[in-house]
Image (cartoon, rainbow, N blue to C red; front, side, top):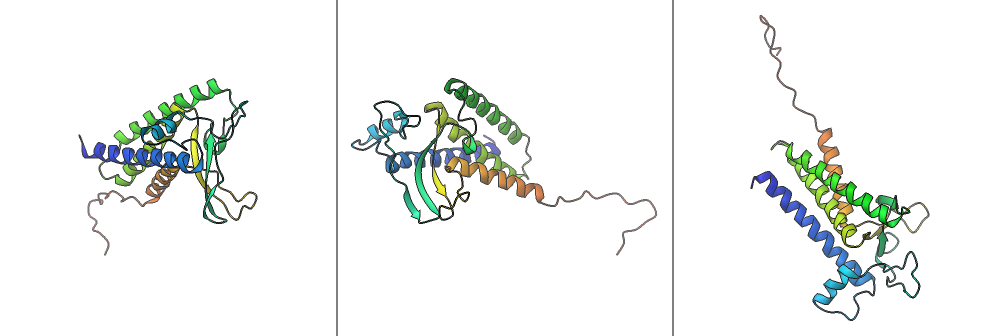
Length: 208
């Protein structure tokens, strides 16, 4: 396997593992879905339990999410959120069947596009390769959620003293990896490129 694709594989697997493990911890610590379970039963519950916030409400079903954990009071909480849409909840109001099909197709097309870009990178573009690998891992992490549950688990809640309009949309590790990847690509695009040396006209000499 080429070194470039080893890098891609390592970063993607690391992001995917971190994303799914932290989502398991979110279900375990921020909901009651896994209470009374142990061992593989907890893993099975993580993969099978759905609609833990009972939204939309289902008759006879009770909310299983608990109060947020205040990691840094007034700034950083952990709270369990199910996001059936895209970033900022976009497209969450689409009919369930159409929404699932839409996100599956979009996710697969996006992954294919990112991998195509990765294949076209040069060995010198290390930052771009890391960025694309982070974006791929993040996209794959959220795609796994949608494939299993039909929604994405979010749990990182940043805000400024609970002020209206001062709350960042709740997100997860996959979202963070995508944002870091995009930021790295922007930084790379701002780097000054070395200009190619131009041949001097005959009869002239370089200026001192």
